[in-house]
Image 1 (cartoon, one colour):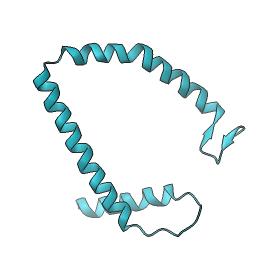
Image 2 (image 1 turned 90 degrees about the vertical axis):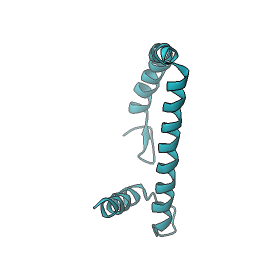
Image 3 (image 1 turned 90 degrees about the horizontal axis):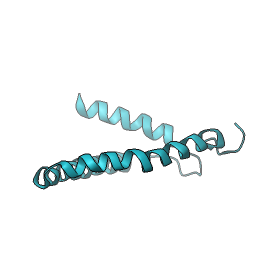
Length: 95
């Protein structure tokens, strides 16, 4: 594609992403903030604690999995290889 950076980012997808991001920020965000502020504080605090706990657990598991991966030392992008190995590790873990 024209105007791409290492096959990851291109102008054709960047412009719609920017337009939709702006829409989300100025139209959808106020709507969700109104809903959020209607929830009682004690419930929103519990939900926040649950989300934080899930994030921390996910972070720990991700770091452990990536630490176990042995990838060649090079400037190449290893995203697909990491994704493949993470899936394999998670499948073995949850079997």
